[in-house]
Image 1 (tube, rainbow, N blue to C red):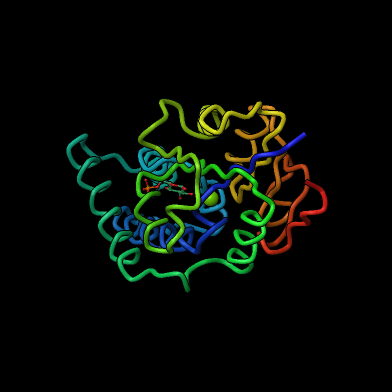
Image 2: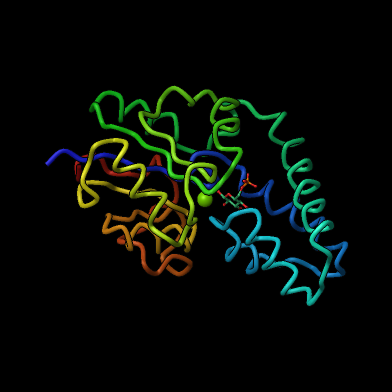
Length: 211
Ligand code: BG6
Ligand code: MG
């Protein structure tokens, strides 16, 4: 049966996970909290609003609703400063070959991202036109770990969930893919992504003979 691929963006296609981390870290310092690598693992795949709620709870800090909105905007401004400098050199290892191979094999591609900046980032790295379906934070009601992001991408591609393979670097995204009844390839290691069907270090290591 023909398969479709659904890819996460940050940390799978490009190196933006570290930009999110640096921007959240800067904000967390203002709450006198040192954001850790392990906090960051939990933040991967989590929406902007839920990320800030998580940080405030870790910092045991509370702010007004108005300040909450301002801080979300400031974090995004810091993030966008980094995005502005991006080009295709920010693609993670193996990504270009992966996309060439998908084209060669005629594999339909969908994006399933929790980011509101997904289209902008894809444009910066030159991949915006490679996807037949794009689902981002502005198109779903319930973010990862809810399966809506991936189910919507499958629907737009015209594929049944069991015929979709998801590529994800976040624990919440792997949970979402499994809840959607899809095959989930973890980008990273099995220790961080125990629910993944298997893990590879980057897209370049994907074995196309399995498709
Ligand atoms: C996810 C990232 O893809 O998008 C998270 O893994 C990020 O770290 C989330 O917080 C939301 O992104 P944005 O660009 O809408 O702030
Ligand atoms: Mg990710």
